[in-house]
Structures are given as C-alpha cells and as structure tokens.
Image (cartoon, rainbow, N blue to C red; front, side, top):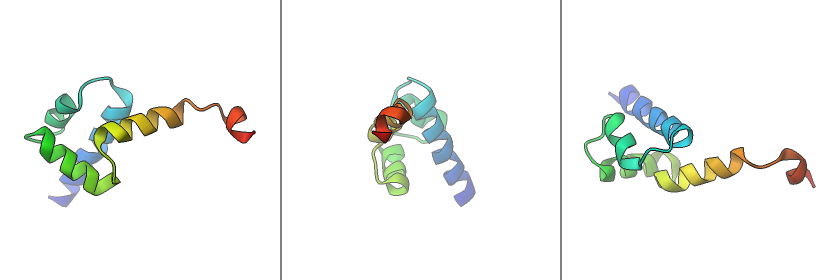
Length: 70
C-alpha cells in the first residue's frame, strides 16, 4: 500500500511539471478522491503545495546556468 501511495505522489509530481492540467485533474488521474486529499499527501511528502511545487520546478528548469553562475 505504501509503495502505491508513493508511486501516485511521484506520478503526480511528474504530471505537475510536465503538463499544464489543473491540480484537480492530476489528483483524480493519479487516484486521489479529492483535491484536498492530494494536497495533504503532497504537502506531507514535499513540504509544498502542488501549485508551489509546480512553480518552483518551472522556475528551476528555466534558469540559464550561465546567468546563475554570475
């Protein structure tokens, strides 16, 4: 059971970063019954809301390493 839950959260993370679908759609797609349940599990795992995680990942991927180096 734990492996399945961990897998759902991992897939949810991937979908948040790779797709522009809503958090609710992603929550349902990975097997959660509500947005609230997904948020709770996600925050427990990452210390961020799904929206904050998505925003942080998108910011990280779009930083030019040459500019970040100085």
